[in-house]
Image (cartoon, rainbow, N blue to C red; front, side, top):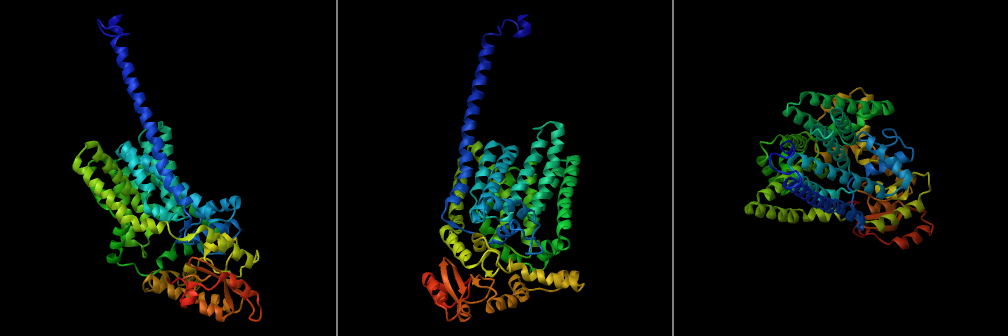
Length: 539
C-alpha cells in the first residue's frame, strides 16, 4: 500500500506533503506579487488619460470628426448634409453620447481615453502571449505614454481603429493559445474578423492589421484559421459597407473612398522619411533590435507584417503624410520594444541595460517637443466662453455662423459650410460624376501638391461663403485658416470683434449706425491678428 501511494519506505504525510505545501506557498506568493504589479501597471496605464483630461488646455487637429458625430446627434445626415470623408460608423457610434451627455468636447475626450486604455490592455495581453508577461506590461506602458496619445487625445480616427484591431488580434491569439475550448477558439477567430471589419469602418487603414493577422496565421501554417479569419473579415467589411451604401447610396463611394485619390500628388519619399524618424524617434532602434532578437520566434511575424503594411502605406501609397498616420505604425513597434526590453532584463546583461537606459533617456529628450505640443492648445475655460458667446449671438436653429467646428460644438450650433477642407473635393467629384467623367477625373487628371490641389478645390465654395458674409446671411464669423477673409476685410463689411481667446476672435455683424456692435466690441477688444492685419490662421 505504501508503495502504491508514496513509494517504498516513504510516508505520504511526511516529506512529500511538505514539498507540496512549499510549492503551493511559493506559487501563492508569486500570484500575490503578480497581482500587486497588475494594480501598479493599471494605475500607470490610466494615469496619462486622467492627467490629460485634467490638463487645462485642449488640443485638436481635425475637429471635423467630432463635430460630424454631433451633427448626427442633431438629426443631420452624413454625405447629404455634410461631407463624410470616411465610413460613418465611428460618428454614428459616438452620436448617442452627445444626446446623453450634451454637446461638449469632453464627450470625444472620454471616448478617446476609453479607446487608448482598451488598446493598452490589448497590447499588454498580446505582448504577454508573444514575448512574456514582463514584455507585455512594458509594451502597454510604452503605448499608454506615447506622445501621440497626448496630441490626439480628442477624437482621432486612428486611435479608435487601432483599439478595435488590437482587441481583435487579442481574441485571435487567445483562441490560438487554446485559452478557450475548441468551439470558442473558432468563435474567437470569427469575432476577430468582425472587429477587424469595425476597425476598417473607423479608418480604412484598419485593413492593414487584418492583413497582418492573416499573414501571421499563414506563416504559422494554420491555413484553416487563416481562411476563417479572411472570410469573417471580408464579411464584416463588405457587410457594414453594404448597410452604409443602403443608407447613403453612391455618395459613400465618392466621399469616403474616391475623394482620397484626388488630394494631390504623393509627398516625395525624401520628405516623408525625416518626418517619420521624428515621430517614431528612438523606438526605431528598439524595433530593429527586437526583430533581430526574436527573429527565430514565430510570434515576431505579426508585428513584422503589420509594420511592413503600415510602412508601405505611409511611405508609398498615401498621397498625404500626417502625424496621426504614425499611431497604428507605432503599435507593432511598442510590442517589439517591450519584448526586447524584457529580454534584456531577463538576461541581466549590464551593457544591454545601459543601452536601454540611454534609449529611454533619448526618448524623453527626443519627444519633449511632441509632449509639449500635445499639452498645448486653447484653454478649456476660454473654449467654453467662446461657445457661450456664439450661442448668445446665433439663435438656435439658425445657421448664420462660420467658425471652427470645435467652437460650434461647444456653442451647440450648426454652422454653415461644414468640413470645408474637403468640401471642395466633394463638389469636384459630384461634378465629374454628373458629367460622366468620374474615373477620368479621379485617375487620369494630373494634380499638384496637396496645398495646390486644395486651393483649386476651394474655389468651388469660397465665393459662396464670402458672398454670404458680405450680404449678412452669416452674422457671426470666427476666422479660420481655410476661410481666407482677413480681419480688416471683416471690419470693412461691418463685422466687429466681440470676444477673443487664444488664436480665435468672434466677429459679429452689426449695423453701422448702431451702437450694439461697439458695446459688444468693448468687451472683446482688439485681437492680436487685427492689430497686425494678418490673415486668420497665421501665427
